[in-house]
Image 1 (cartoon, rainbow, N blue to C red):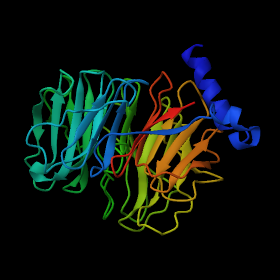
Image 2: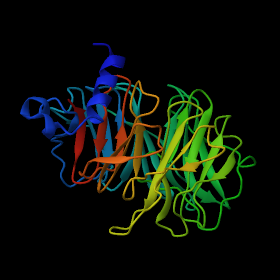
Image 3: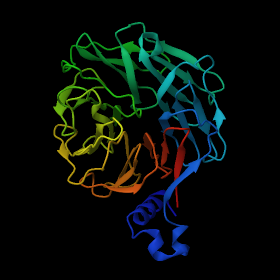
Image 4: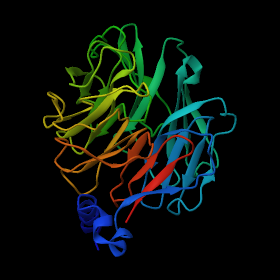
Length: 353
């Protein structure tokens, strides 16, 4: 079966009548999240890079980075030495050997590390020298060009750029960045507050202000436009937490209010014009969601995850329905349909069927 056909089959099973209705013979074949034992119950993994069905990287609290190359049967602790006090919130992996991880925090707590040998050794390639900056997310356009974003400094979001696969970084001029709203910031909840599609387009998700917004750049972060998103705002805990674009036109946004127990209506939105306009989902996830990813080889299906469950859309983000109630913070689906999710208490899972 080709990867495309397998992706279609997985989608069909996800959207079919629940497996129990067909009896035990079908229950074994129904796609579901299968937890993989990471051996790290004290770590919350908010950073995830799914290279393939077999290979994935996760990054989280306590300076922890893990890697699997056998589909999650075993995990190797490849944490950078001396990073135990850091909070890794994003990881971008090019393959099983090359990866870049971002640690968040004020001032020098915001750092970037890079490995070329599967995490056996790491090089610290950036340490934030500005106490006013707080880096949240990073993204790569290709194997060389990438960006990282910081909460506003001097009234504007700060963008860090690399042209050599994360070996060196430069702060971009902010002349093309619109002013931030009062209280506006990014959310380092899933490594998906800064995402790219294609060679030059990148989007930045915001919250914490009176309005939630999505900023878009078509020139690798030098000039930006801002558009309001119809997701709850008006509080430091509300806004757009994650974005996913399957091409430069079709995107999804999820978020809401991350305070436990509080309702989050209208927690999802979609765009078909590259982010110039956003429309709320007619049927949103029932609660706050922090991560979102398009299913591979599908133009209409995607998964959203959060502490209270996983939701599926099969109509491009118009409506969502809950398909799992496990707690996850982030989700990623590589081209070979090996979708992965990660979250609190060392939880990492792969979509099985």
